[in-house]
Length: 445
Image (cartoon, rainbow, N blue to C red; front, side, top):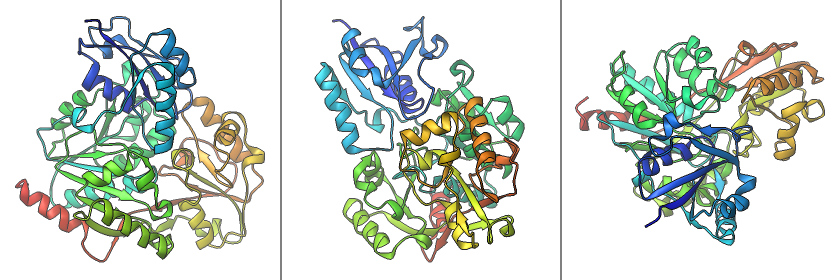
């Protein structure tokens, strides 16, 4: 029998993992290409032979998803494997229709076939959308476990936007490691908060190789924490699954891929941001959760904002800079920066769109509903420079930085600025500590 010709549709993350776990050494299939979407400037590369294995001595090309129909026909593709997340269910099926119309089968892989089993107990943190609050939840879990004397090693969902051959396994223990691995702003936003709190975080491309190194981390490892990205499945078989849901986007848990699958499979659901959500939205989210997974433990939580320098906000015309993916494919309209501007008495929130340049101006065209917020896009040096130029050109008194990192460390801002920070706080009971005590007892930690 001839090999089945496969095209993997991705966004530089789940696609590579699906290849590594299902297709890499599989003689039944020939992966002819990847396509790239969601993240700017990640097509035009190749998945290198050093990662692709012996069946692919020349590597595998990566094309823009816009070429999908042509690729299916020109490459005689049998099956397309959809391999990215945080998109509406209807979008997934539109791509499926396009694939079918071009003559190929359309495949969605179950996490059962792509999860890697660890020798250590694993806690996974997933979500129903980008920007629900996975990062602060992961930090809270690590803080609680470290207070019990446990060594926790975090492994983050992939963000390999640079040289793929150099990004097979990445370990971040210091701020210098962020420079060493040439991290983008998006990567720094996820790694830096862990590093400054004193815990190690891994990421990269080959997640079985990453897991084996993390299990034997030189600083010790008692527990692996999967710090998910978007609303994707865990890459590792979890022993405790925690999923974050956002009442600001109630309904997404039913209508985005793969949100509903995450809720069906989870042990614990955290309803975050209750302090800023409408009560009726919180109630509707509860009702949806009860329909999908009535047996899950539900924790109510808030992510209250804290500001370094409130005087930079009060009475000032402010520019609000928020986490990029949360505003783009995450589709959030109100983030921590807007909450801080309102809470601390800004006189006006300045629209950055008239001042946006280069790749940032293009981002606003691709995502026209972002509104009066500036996404901290920084997937490369050009984008970082465009971000700096846009901030400095904006006619405002001061800047509210609501990204998880110290943006002033990366770019030079020519006006007063202040950072907004937020941590997870449970409301009432049950609490995460109770869940983690049961987890520790189960695994005799």
